[in-house]
Length: 309
Image 1 (cartoon, rainbow, N blue to C red):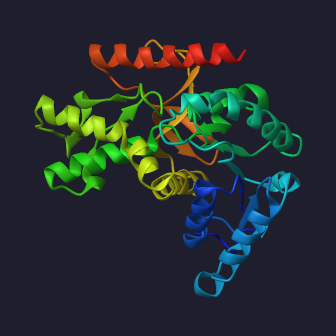
Image 2: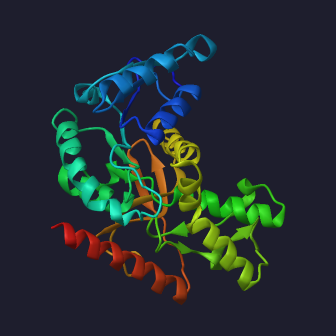
């Protein structure tokens, strides 16, 4: 909740008011995560329209000042969420988006860092791991303050499908998807559990659950054009952990150094997230099969990054 007792208001800026940015803004407003919420878009009329529509609902919710602004409003922002860029089209992979969105991001990061040097960059645009890495490089900020949404959503999808299969609330399922937010992501079946009890799922069921997890975005995009609700809730969860100084463990994308044999790349792994961003990266004791798959995921992204340079 926004704290009206704070002398300095908390501010979240969202850059990019497409499906993800708009739904994220609405979620943050409903949950009153910050006292100020700013919408920035290359189409200022679109940002203004979304702002007006949400402002008209404030008598039902209250507590948040919402406006359509520009990059100068990033100056006092605690968190800048970037959802801008070309969206994923049916039949298009996240990697296909890379060159289009890398050029868009170069301009966005320059404008943000020209006015802000203290905030946290939260990247949601795909391919999120690579764009988080290039944003970190370009910004010159500590890696702890440049965070990708990573495999937080993938892990939520994974837990939902496991919970559905077992008839258990997904909030009680402990299971991780790590690596790329994309086709090379890795299910950590060896550590999946309910209250410390191993999940008893046969190999065929495991493969079905993972395939449905990995391909969930494609299914949604083919059906309705874009994903929005669950990613907005994932971003809201990260914002809550940061502004609330929670120290929550979330599978976000961060810079790895000698993590299960992987270095100098952003990938989604369990991290402790608080007011300073990623405070700590938690080691996962992967089995050999998972470790090989995780390293392959890292190598795939490194090749893509090298292709940009």
